[in-house]
Image 1 (cartoon, rainbow, N blue to C red):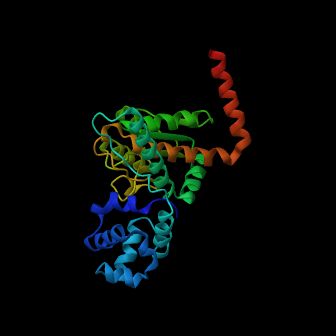
Image 2: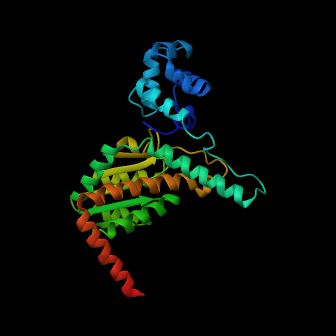
Image 3: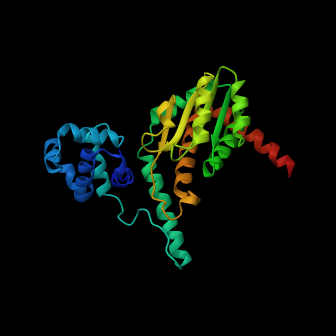
Length: 281
């Protein structure tokens, strides 16, 4: 486990139960010093039970208290200048660029810390078997879906990224048996994505979700779950800068895993498509 666990706790604090919030607040207050305590000592200081401490760890995507301690120890060695920053009025461009860099690095670090490598491998295997892949997102998530389509089309996969919800639903209704639906929603609550997930399930299509960390409507009823970190974007939420960066990182990671399964064929297909595009110039 690597990355900054405190950011994950801060972003999900309100979603925790009351007793889990007590554990979370203790960790936020005492930081890596918690790594020196036993489970019983953590529970005592948080005024809760050892079982609640373990439940908190699992709510944070950790296997247990030992992994929490490892994450806290790793965090203590991180550069304290990194983190999330929002913009202020009339800030100099160089400061704004440095803030964007810090936000991007922190987003990637936090998302990398929670990447499920086995899940990526499983999804890549299922994608090889799939005859058709449907990919859908709204707003900034559509940009990620479009990028996804372009990547896999170059590797010879039949991929549909359609913005029209009705058209996508129609196409999925007549989909081949070996198909996959990939729904992208940072909140996991985007109505159109959820509706299409339900249609995919009804038609026997494998389902994959890419959402922000935590349980949500979209990822509770899919075959495979991919998640990114939650980043604070209160002021610039409409731009979805951090969420888009995290989603692109997961898609790129999946692409690498998929492409590496048959690297010789991947290189051949990429060269062929590059040559075709060059002929158009």
